[in-house]
Image 1 (cartoon, helix red, strand yellow):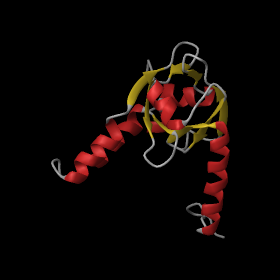
Image 2: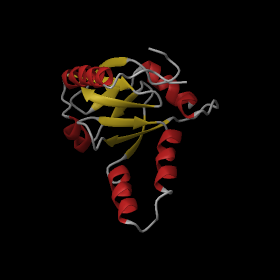
Image 3: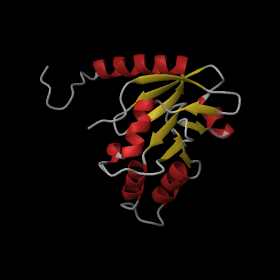
Length: 160
């Protein structure tokens, strides 16, 4: 089941803190987005800059571990393995929310996503999520809908 759904608005404060949406915190605590129903205490969260978009990608611990499983399918000393490992892990961080559900974003990640003390948006992507500047997120959602329509996208099992 997709645990990270919907768009949730937030604010970044002057110290780089942002509250993880309550619905997302619940998924991170239970680990349900990773298929694990046992409580995880504390609930780690992994963030990395997207190499495709000006946003941050968020993962549960289990979802982040799946990246390593895919990486391990490549020959260990190949150029592909080296490049992908660098792209995935060199700027990734492991965070834990404080008791109010806030995380502190490092300046490098804030800069990559163009975040400021204005609005930010958490975009659900099923087993993962993204953190965007709010206005850029709206443009991305419109673009994604248009591309999906052009591709005549249909959800698996849905007949159009």
